[in-house]
Image 1 (cartoon, rainbow, N blue to C red):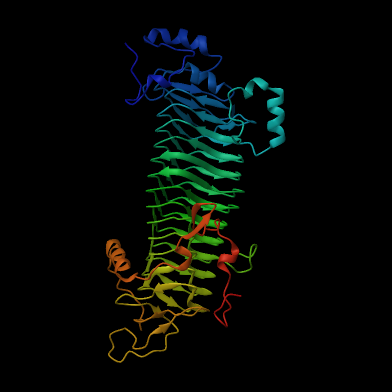
Image 2 (image 1 turned 45 degrees about the vertical axis):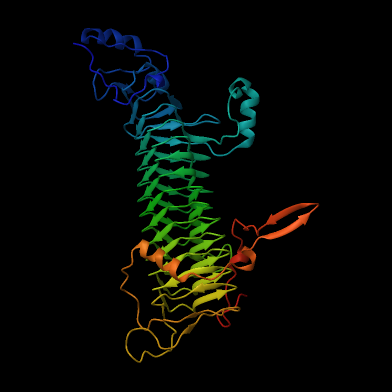
Length: 505
């Protein structure tokens, strides 16, 4: 009986490197084959379970002996690091532990289509001295290697790879992936790493139901990525950013919990992304959109209790747009118990802030040095200062304005719109909400295209002085200059307000 093929339909022979090749054509030959390789592994002929590695055996030797399409099962116990360089399924049983070492990741995946599940990988923390000594003692190991790479528990360089139901602990970087399209990370735990995952130059990434905890730096650092999905995951207790999207486009961040980080979720020079139904709490910044991040939708998120004392006592932002981030939609969010519920600062324009419930914050919404943002249909309730504007010129109503708990005007005809305008507080503010609501707004029916049309219709102010280019003649050459953004955002850009005067302290 001929051996049944276990090669997957998309398997590429280009990934299958030469090594110990086992040909299992006839059932009677199996005992002889097993006797030859018993020192390294037990190979079973089965379409579903083609290779097995038990505790104490060499995983790499079994991978070398396996054929593309096989499944290598890693049993309980501790195992040395290995590289998967052919199309295989690596399946852990009984919680096997893979031990990384200096400049030796626990697992390196360098072939398309690999599937890995059920492993625990103990990583190696950053140790510059040990790394230097390693290469001084092993100079051949440095040949052709990127010495700037961190100690990563898992390094991924292939496409269509799936890593699921695994735990990674204590690495300088839990997962390092570059140019790895269609990567799937599911049901992973990344704990006590310097950085949970660093993923760059990828598209089609999917992160689902993962837990990233207690990372000294960032949790998920995603740079130069497109069309990724991060959903139903938790990033808790990082020393920097829980989830960073940098130069990202067309991504969906949905249903995640980002808690106890410096920045919960940050979009940095990232556009055309959807950030929906996430919970951000006890961060310094809950959601930060900055450095020219445009045309994003920030919708139906809950930003609660974003206040921290280790940086500035009691300061924290629920949702903040900064540094020339424009044409974004901030709609249907809840901001409660933060220092600033919503903030728009430094050169942001043509953003729509609509249908948000902003309650019980020190400051409901604060705008600083912006123009042509449209704020309407929001509920600003029981904030110490409901709305504040400084050095800005924005639009605070369309056919409807906002509901302010401190509005004292009348509504003689009972249409729900106050007869007197509402003055927006601020040291240099000359803005008014001309259609303030006398009852809470709860009839949101505009779709995103209609909201954008409202911005186009109402945002008609001209450019600010600082947006007009400066022309200078220098030694016969005309120089054109603009004010540059001061990113990353600085504390001076978000000074707290005095609750008594409404002015910056």
